[in-house]
Length: 121
Image (cartoon, rainbow, N blue to C red; front, top):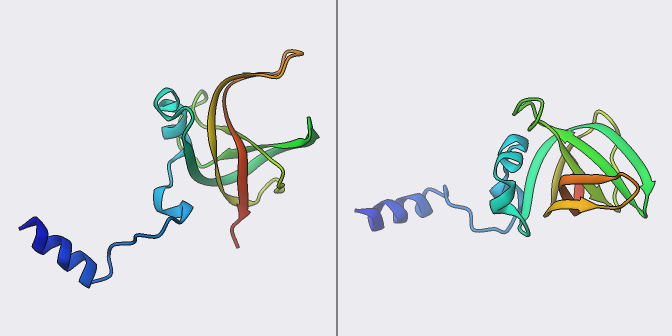
């Protein structure tokens, strides 16, 4: 029966086999809550830019929220060469890095590094 169902899904065009970042989107809360198992993996998420720090250590720090999570799990900090503006709706994709310490008191339990940032139209 599962083969028949799989054939039906493909016939109806319900299956997508592209490697598009949007195919495997995670919520901001899910990334925060599962960061230990996601460490080293590339993840994608969508949300609203709530803060941007430009040009720090040759990268931009972009804070993204999507309305999920609580005060401890509702924010992703993304580093990227690309930039977005506060208020932009974005799709980000980057590598989960834990316990990143830049020195000088700048330490992050979770970062999404070297991310691509696409402003959604």
